[in-house]
Length: 92
Image (cartoon, rainbow, N blue to C red; front, top):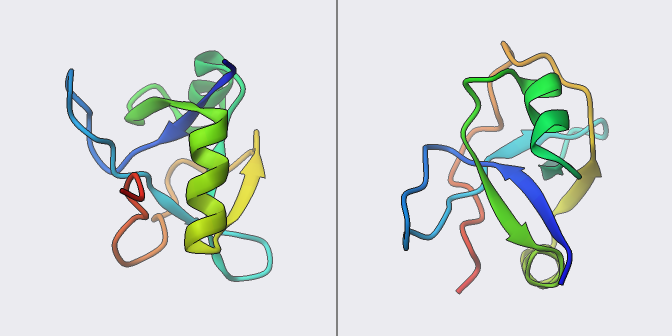
């Protein structure tokens, strides 16, 4: 199964569910930044950005359920503050 890498609000330990970090999208709505590799995520957001590996199918289910946007491999200024409010979590 394919995986992607998603910024999280805090580091995720073994067995913990990630809280995905929402970002402001180009249209002003909140969405999730999704990266195809850890190297790409770190290149775009910096080495200090916490992240979690996610199943592509589970992530697609989550964004559909929560009705939030997705940006693939977006280049963002890591100094910018993520979107305010709670992240979408894992959508359990």
